[in-house]
Length: 408
Image (cartoon, rainbow, N blue to C red; front, side, top):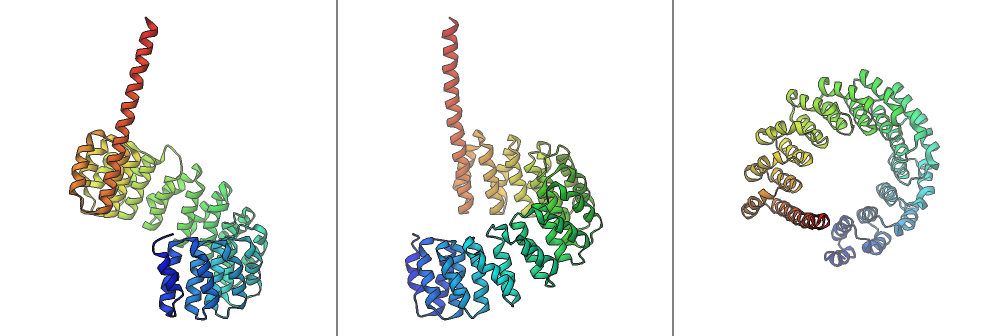
């Protein structure tokens, strides 16, 4: 049990509501199930709304299904709508199918929109497809956009592939961009390759940025080579940096020999730093060795910290020894601790024996704790590599002796 927990459990019983609330929130953040009984007691015994709210949220974060029955019983008699909503959210986090009837009843009978919305989202987390028909009916008949969107989300969280035709229809016919955004996201989760044609057709004519972004991300989730050309077109020509960034992310998920050269070419043409960052990250994931010079240049000269961070990580992903010197230079000179940390991370992947003494020197000079820890990780990785190389050399020598003996 965490050293903090005994003190927090004492504060949970305090007469001071502020102490109780802070303790409950802290216990939820710690996530230790041994706090569950005391949190359940606090939920039962405290009349003030904020304490009940904090305790039920903590129980949801901890995820101990022992609390399911109490939360259900308390939900039925609690008068406060904020607490009732939080209880439904907690039941979703617990994921206990024993809450199914309570959640379904709340969807069908509660009058307050916030409570119904919370119940719809929660029931999608139970992994019980028996509710799929009810959810599709809400999508078709409900006037509230919030409830429709919540139902769409729950359907794809459930993995209900039978909802894909409905999603395709809504993507084509709905005049509500919020709904189109959500069904586009849903098709990325449950539509499979059959959804690509509809997604691409909508992408070509769609004006809403949020819908286009959702479509592009879904094409990346489906990760089929037939999406390469439309995604490349977006990366090169879409006016929105947000959409171009999403296209770069999606292209990293597709295995196709054409992609790396396209990304590398576009890196030179791109002017927006956030998009460059994503292109560099994608080149790293594709392990494109031809991109090393361009990535090293970004690492050395970009004024944007996130671009340099992405470049440092990408060089580790590509794992080519040509990156050792530039990474050591970055580790010594970059002003950003975050960039230095990831330069050290990449050096731990490269395991260059010749860099060990330099890293040991940098370890003594470095002031940032997290960077120091990562430098030590790199040194440890090199030590392990040295031991492995020595062991392999011994084995090779033994094999050579055996072969020599056999020959004579």
